[in-house]
Image (cartoon, rainbow, N blue to C red):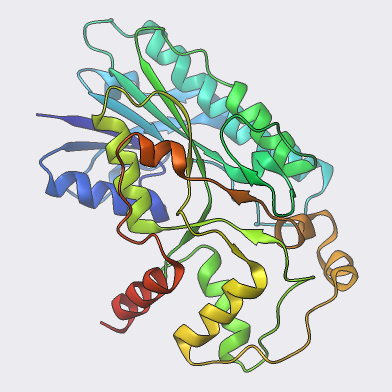
Length: 305
């Protein structure tokens, strides 16, 4: 039986991915600080990256390892302490997993490892179309991603894929409910200039893309995990307003006001990058929801049902 080990299995993406893999006949093993709480048929194994602890039996005979776990960057103001915690949560966990794979018998270790990264790597780049060869940007998000992608010295025999993930759209959590809330209160407004780009991906397409990377040996290295329809914030918010029947009619929220409210975290809203999906499409992946309006229509149909 094919077997996938997933960190962050209870999260937004991990939950969707595990459901898809289980339906396709995979055994799914989840790494958790509370493994007994994971729902059946997921097999729980203990880990705690903060303590450098991992039940390495989880890797025995697994075909792939998917690492999705990491501190939520939007959960609390970016103090120097908080920023260090965000970076450490990503680098320490990668190093812990890589060291465990190095110790695992080569005949029993996973053949591939799929690692989450983020398009924050590119920083705020205006309307420049960015691909996997583009240079990193400036700011904390770029700094975090640079350290994240350097972490983990995995065995050379293990095929390694790092996915720079865009803004994941799901009605169950993440950015979308936060963006729709002011619209539903008839207080919809575009943050900043509205010209900053938002590169997004439907949560089901992201889970499918991860499975595609798992199952295709030719997929190796860095790939952007974004839909082929990046939008400016102005365009995105107007399409979102139309999808939920709430217009965007207030003046844009000035950038300086967001900086006063959020401090350095305002970079998440006022900055943006226009990111290309061409490389993963050239590898053979096909998006089910490549257009924003199509994606939003599906998401809100699901929510209504």
